[in-house]
Length: 154
Image (cartoon, rainbow, N blue to C red):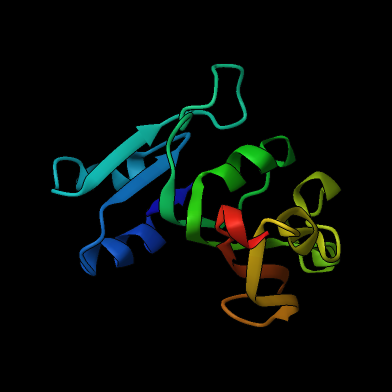
């Protein structure tokens, strides 16, 4: 599984404890450096938004988890990281969150239905939510759980 923009690796750590091989990727991997050397762990420190090239070129995963991260220029690259039949779990802030704090810049807030739009025709939607999330702090979030279609399912 891939924990993209992993921060401290909260999601990847859960998968790791369940026996999964996990790749952690972030611009700063200090939060997961303590996992280095563990069996089944790959850590990639990379700027996903920089000019240095896509660090995950040619890789695919059974599960891709993205939480609290949005960089639209990489949408298609990100979706290609999910193997056919694999799962995408994506959650981040959405329009309306500016009433609750940061982020408030529209460049970092999903538009209404945006996760549905970018996965349309490529993924089966298993669950989708958009709205106020009360905990851990109030925020407007958009969330999707989706399975990438096999090539002969489209």
